[in-house]
Length: 117
Image 1 (tube, one colour):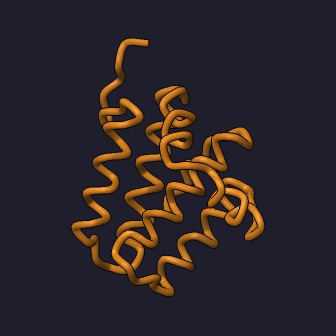
Image 2 (cartoon, rainbow, N blue to C red):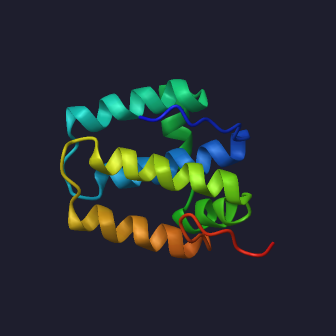
């Protein structure tokens, strides 16, 4: 996991954790390396395991709406987080790739390209 850190607010963290949780579950197998990556993310953006349960109550569309309103830098950090979680087990499953693509499209982010705000 890279050292890139961004100060996400609590609502953004809930949306991100909900999204990461769905990404970990996307291929139907929860790998221990994905759990390790999640633990690292917990330290990186400051949340605990109880936060995951709260995040699971957020509807994906609501989470994406929250992330859509984040500034470019936070969206860039989010896409990096998603990439890191997807590759954590050493293999990016096509379901993970498809989910990341849907998320990026839904939040209106093009990796590495600033959109006019």
